[in-house]
View 1 (cartoon, one colour):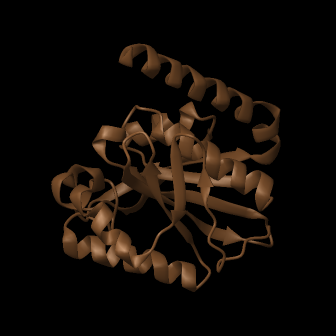
View 2: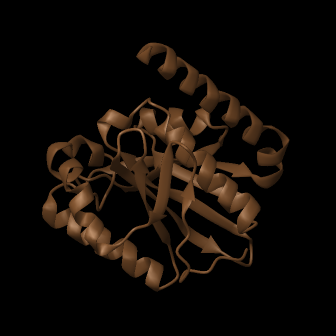
Length: 209
């Protein structure tokens, strides 16, 4: 694994651009924090409300400075606006693994291909640029949207940890863990994800026309 936490990695294709999160991005994300509180239902330490968003952004940046995490903000080129965030965390250089999470998008970006485009870029970066062997994922076992999204990109369910953590209301929840391996990425997932993205794009184009 070779990642430079001081480097400003930019991941993009014709639909989305991911760049490192910075303090001023608070303004870009505030609308989701205030107007879409349901986005944070399953996340302890979520960014609902301006005060929590400020803490969320500052903590993410501090974690990058401490070389623990690498957060991105997501820009949708089709909408010409920032629509969410994601990050790498739990780097384990000795084991050559990393986790991908803290992923969320505004409701307008649900189901429109934003997630699949972003996941393609970050997974390509993880497996092909920094060379990890495994990318891990996790979610509340009640968060069916997130679980289905992870399965749809090719993740394998590994199991459920009971009573594992807290949701945004302080309730104990079970957590589901998934993963993707480098050989799986090269063998079929990269190709399959490309096909799914192309199909989504064609459907959207035909709807617009």
